[in-house]
Amino acid sequence: MGHCFSHLSKTDRYTIEALLRAKHKPQEIADIIHVNVSTIYREIKRARTVFRNSDWTEEERYNPDLAEKRYRENLAAKGGQIKLANDHAFAAYIEHKITVEHRSPAAALADIALEGRTFKTHICKGTLYSWIDKGFFLNITNKDLPIKKNKKQKYRKVRTVKKAPRGESIEKRPPEINNRETFGHWEGDTVYGGKKAAPDVLFTFTERQTLQELIVKMPNRTAVSGVAAVDALQARFGDAFPLVFKSITFDNGVEFSDVDGLERSATNPEEKRTKVYFCHPYSSYERGSNENQNRMIRRLHPKGTDLGTLTDEDVSNAETWINNYPRLKFGWKTSDILFSEQMEAILACNYCETEL
Image (tube, rainbow, N blue to C red; front, side, top):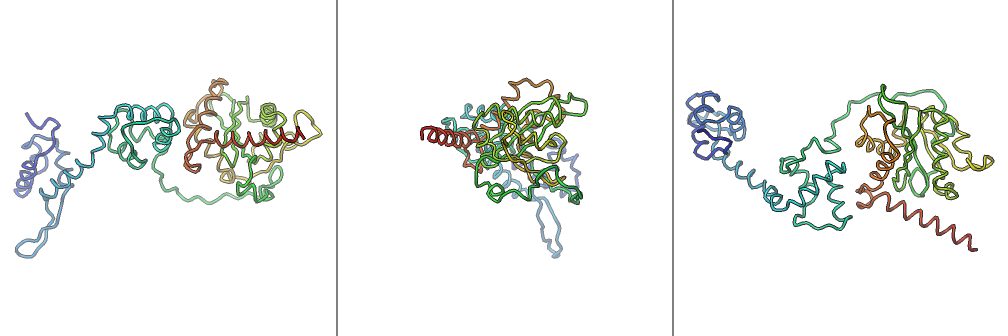
């Protein structure tokens, strides 16, 4: 009895046309054909064309032939559904990458090549986005994608503050740093939980050329913790620290207010370990790479997460995830690959100097 989720037939479409011309309402037509009334509304909207009457007046009518044609075209466009049905391994792989590993569709496809995998299905990122839009996957929809369609942002007047930065301004930063021509220049900031969460924060550092991410968990957003975070990185890189961290650009948060402490070596207070620059107030875009990476961290730990509950392993996993994320700007290489190449060059150079 009724259509029971079956598609409208061509005969149904001619019936709809006849009933509309007989001035039947959509609900009446739905009852006669045994479909939901929303089906009738969609069908009418699918194919309306302007007809010219014998008296040369024009009126808009439902066109059953055009509706059938568009239905067939849409049906043909769903060929991807058949492909997926014949390649369960590919479908499962993509679903796992997006829902578990928090990849974008494009990055999920890039991982196939990076991991040396092969599937029967070969598609571009545009097709994958289209298949997700059309609901071809059982376990993912647009809601699972990390980045939604960008909405036009409402213009807001830029806030200006007549206040000097805490240290040397970004205006003094050399062009080779601004242009990302040289390795070893970083951007830094903090990621914190909600108002009701513990005061623990993540100090994040992003290398401008390779986009390598380093994360240090600290108990609060104080100047002491800011210095301690850089101290922890110095301990991590040892003698190579001055070559890896040639400069760091921060915002004007209180956690970065101890400029001398940030620049001074933890092992030899008489020496400087790095150079610190500061953005203009309320100008987070001046350290945009770090801001983007912080948004990636929010995929794993949304705002409001109690960062005090994160273990060292959780922090390490977040760092590893970001550094092994395929990047379009690098030809789908990862930051970890590029950073490792730079580190190998630094270590090789140090070895040569030692031998000499």
